[in-house]
Image 1: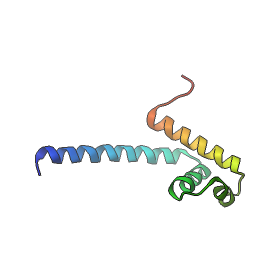
Image 2: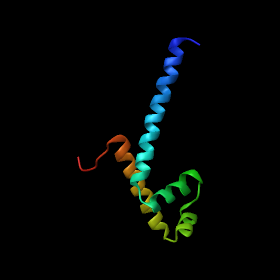
Image 3: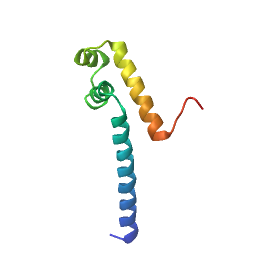
Image 4: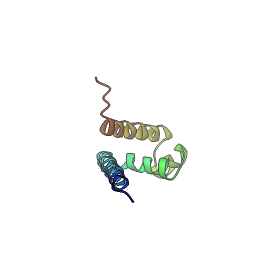
Length: 84
């Protein structure tokens, strides 16, 4: 393996770890129900009805949780701000 290849791998790993740290920070900024809704929807593939039943809320409330969570993550990772 060449030095260039090794440096490229290390750079990719470093970028990946920085992104992961950013995602972890975002998840900590979310409320418990937003975290649960994200986990159920995007990791387990549950639909809104199933998430609503598991969290004991309405489907509209699940949509709100996911909307808020996605906006928080987007703002933190990409610096988007709708007020600007």
